[in-house]
Amino acid sequence: MGDILFENDVFNILLQRYRENKLAHAFLLETNSLDSCYKDLIKFVKYLSCPYEYNDNCDNDNCHNCELLDSGNLPSFIKVDPDGTLIKKGQIQEIINRFQSIPIFSNYNIYVVNECDKLNSSSANSLLKFLEEPEDNILGFYITTNKMNVISTVRSRCQELNVYYDLAKTDYKYSSVVAEYLNSVYKNEDAILYNKVEALNLLSDRSEWIDFFKEMLYILYSYLKNKSNEFNIRLLNEMSDKEIVKIEDLIKSVLKYLQSNGNIELILDKFVLEMRDLHA
Image 1 (cartoon, rainbow, N blue to C red):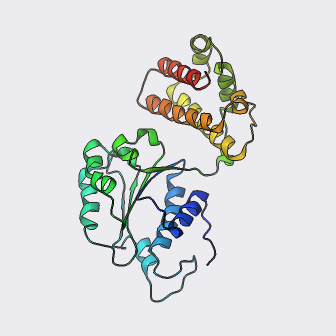
Image 2 (tube, rainbow, N blue to C red):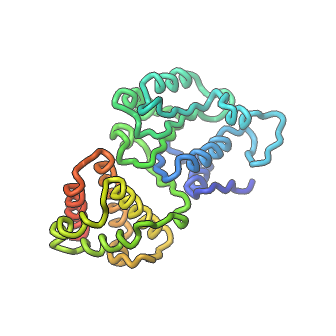
Image 3 (spheres, rainbow, N blue to C red):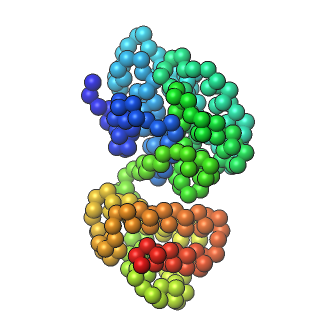
């Protein structure tokens, strides 16, 4: 059977791990497109749930798992979305109740928690049995646009994967500002002063700063994928990939503070101080 091609290659890697019987029991998927990630995930679930050999044009009259999945009626699959602003404990209890028995129509009971950063402590704690005492026939997928916002009891028990789409098509509205800022604070002992005198005047409001740091994150992701420093950012030429990944995590932390209405000046100072530790 030929490989199934997904829009994002992470799922091809997961497919290979499945074939090698090396799948983890829970995955935290950070993405810049919830819809694209879920579309690829559903295709992956179809493969896992197929009793034969899955392909996109399957016409096997003896199996209706894909039809059941597409209609939301496959007993071994459940997806949870936020109910309002939160994912509630009762929604998680539905997963627990559904998966008390072994899967009948497929190899796994599979659950998806979409926008898992909307879990609160109560609903997250309800999932701990699945996460701390995993059963061989249960797989969990947690999807978010910012893993730094995911409650630690969930994040620490999942395998984390970055599932990003169309980075080359990103409209880099702030690219020149991002480059100016990073080049100005990198290895600059006066970076705190630069923040106060120059940086705070680069953008006018919180929403712009959020977009600014999101774009910074995408530029770093794109660099690690393509090794093209098209915006001439000095640190990309001087820091290791491992160090750049740490900067990505720092940016996600910054975004979390910005989205929580933290003080912008203090957040920028935190960024440059922690950047300094990375290249000290």
